[in-house]
Amino acid sequence: MNIIKRLFSTAYMVKPDMCRGDIPPSKEAYSTSLLIAIPAIIEMVSISLMDMVDTMMVSRVGPQAMAAVGLTMQPRMIFFSMFFALNIALTATISRKKGAGEMDEARSYLRHGLMINVLLGLVLTVLAFLLAQPIMILTGAQPDTLAEATSYFRITNLFLIPQVLTMTICTAQRSIGNTKIALKVNVTAKIISVILNFLLIEGRLFFPRMEVEGVAWARSIAACVAFAIALSSLLHKDSPLRIKLKDKWRFEKPILISLGRLTSNGLLEQLGFRTGFFLYNRVIASLGTAAFAAHVIASQLMMLSFTFAEGIGAATTSLVGQNLGKNRPDLSIMYGKIGMRMAILCALVLSTAFTFFRFEFAALFSTPPDPYIITTTGGLILILAFILPVQTAQLVIGGSLRGAGDTRYVAYTMLLTVGFLRPFLGFVMAYPLGLGLAGAWIAISVDQLARLVMLFARFARGKWITAKV
Image (cartoon, rainbow, N blue to C red; front, side):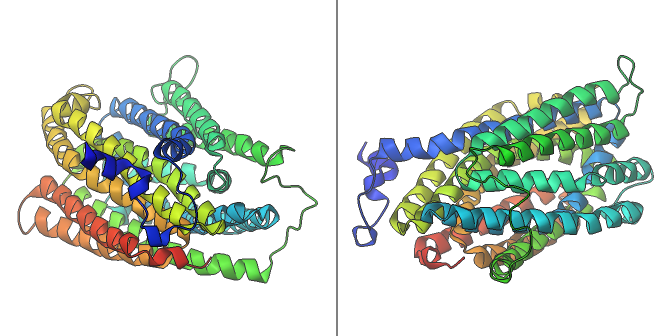
């Protein structure tokens, strides 16, 4: 009992010499974290579950269709890298300004983020349309998936600007602890996407059968609806982040320098992360369409588990940044540790469920049942069950460091582990060692474990509390 108390009680989370004031009791601190985390968890889990429903719908068309959609994932994420990096910078700055009570400054950072999104989005939209087919070939698309993957990539990127603007608005709202807005925006969009997929993939009611293109149009229409809802949250008169047309909509050098410094670190992280995933997916795509389809299914379940940690991480990032803005690094340390504990508990529950029901989960995505895909996916899910506690812990620790503005160390960690270690080990274990798809997934385990060790060592040293934004 004493071990559990020492592990979960806030009284033992901060060293006495680090305390800058009273440490809230455990019940109050966990309640504060959960108040922000629960809407974020509901949002992200709901999105992940509906993404799984999308995948199930696409699987009815066949493994080629599922693989075609899966092939576009990492190139799209590489296109989004700059926006993810910018949002990391906005999270650190806006949460810190919120904690310091400087909301005018927070709104100014948000306006800069929106303007950058529009300019960069225009450039990338044109590039995505012109280079879609060469990118899909580079990704590893086979002759049976190239045309569908190219079409999907082009359609979804035509609506890139509303997607990235929505991401930035939701990031800003989460940064000040308002996770309910992002919940409303994203869950509504996914519900619309699922309904449209139902109508467009197989051509129900009076809609034409569009298969993979139907998924692309469903996603794009839903993205436009999401943007409208997100924008309305900024136009409301009571919004702490309210924007107006008469606001100062021009770039200011000090803010650009601040965002540029943090974004460059975030961009290094994202490029390493996404390039690593791109190369890793290239390795798996070379194993064949059926193997890649099994990988896509297992990855969907990994994303589902990821969302629990991501929701807790969003709350942790916000609380870490806000308390550093209040000059309470002791509370930032405490909330970082609370987030880790909550995430690991969620992971243990999910790992147990995945272990005992791995083949049942796999069968959900194989219609009609394909013995190879079900058996192969079941094996991958067993590896996933081992990965989850490690993955969730490092996700929350990384979120704590980003919330503090310590983005450079996180960037180097991602570059080394995901950008190099995962694709290199994935290739070695899949081909020279002859372990195939299972070997590639063992490489994920090694990557996650290495990342946890590096990030936890940084968090434990405590230098991140002095990071500047």
